[in-house]
Image 1 (tube, helix red, strand yellow):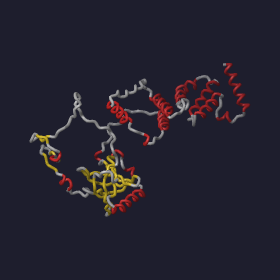
Image 2 (cartoon, one colour):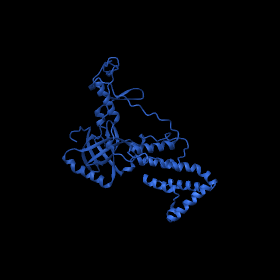
Image 3 (tube, helix red, strand yellow):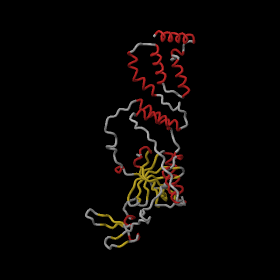
Image 4 (cartoon, one colour):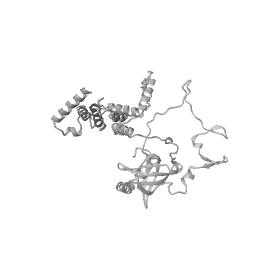
Length: 351
C-alpha cells in the first residue's frame, strides 16, 4: 500500500490495544469525466469564486468553512476546531462490538477503505486483530471521525488485509414505505416455476467477466471524433411486440437465455406450456365420452407435466406416451402392449 496515498492517519482502538494504521481508498472510479464548454466556440467554462462583500475573486487559500445559522448568521469553523473536537474518535477507529456479518443491512454500506499497518510496531497487533476476526466469523463495528463528522464503520478481513466499510447510521436509511405495489396480486405456481427455470438457466456469473460496456462505447466515440472520423452508429434496437401475457414473456425469456448459452432450439423449448393447455381443456375432457383417444391424450399430459431432465429424456417420454405407455403398462409384457395397441386401433376404427 506504499504507492497508494493515505487519506487519514490514526489508530484502531481494540480494547487497550492500539494499532497505528493508515486509511486508503479500496475503490477507484474509471468513469470518463467531461468539461463544460461554450457550444459556439468550444471555450472552457470555468467557475470563479467571489467574495460577496468585497466583490472580488478569492483564491482557495482564502476560503474556509462556515456554518449558517437559522437567522442567516455565518459562524466560522476552522480546521483546528474540527481537529480538537471532544470525541474519542477524532484520530481513532474505536471498535465497539463484534457481530455476525448478516446483522449488517446492505443498505447501510457506504465507501470502502483498506486499513494499512503503519510501521513495524503495528504488524503484530494488526495481525492479531485480523486472525481474531477470521476465527470468530464476525465483523467489527467501529466509530471514527472523517471529513468533519463521526461515522460508523464495519471492519472485515479481505485476503491478508483488514478492510473497513463506512456505514450509514440506522436513522439515515429510509423505510421502504410506498415502494411495493399497493394492489393485490396473485402469483400462480406455474409463473413461479417459469421464473425458477429462468433463474436456473441464467445461472451464476463470474463478476470478473463483467465490464463497463458504456465506458468502452464512449471511448470509441471519443477516439473516432479525435481522429476526425464518424462515430460508430447505435445499433437498431429490436422492436418486439408489446407482451401482455406474463407467462409468454417468461417462456420467451427462458428460451432466449438457453439459446444464448449455446443450447439447441429443442432444449430451449419451455415444457410447462403443455401443462398449461391441459389445465384449460381438462374439464371438457372429463365431461366428454371416454374414448381411448382421450385417455391417450391424458396420458400424454401426465407424461409431459413431469419436468424432464434433458431433451433426450423428454423425447423418450413423448415416444412412450404416443404408444400409450404409462408406469403401469411399462411393467406389462410386450404381448400385452401389442394387444392393447390392437384394441386401441379397433376402437378408433369403430368410432
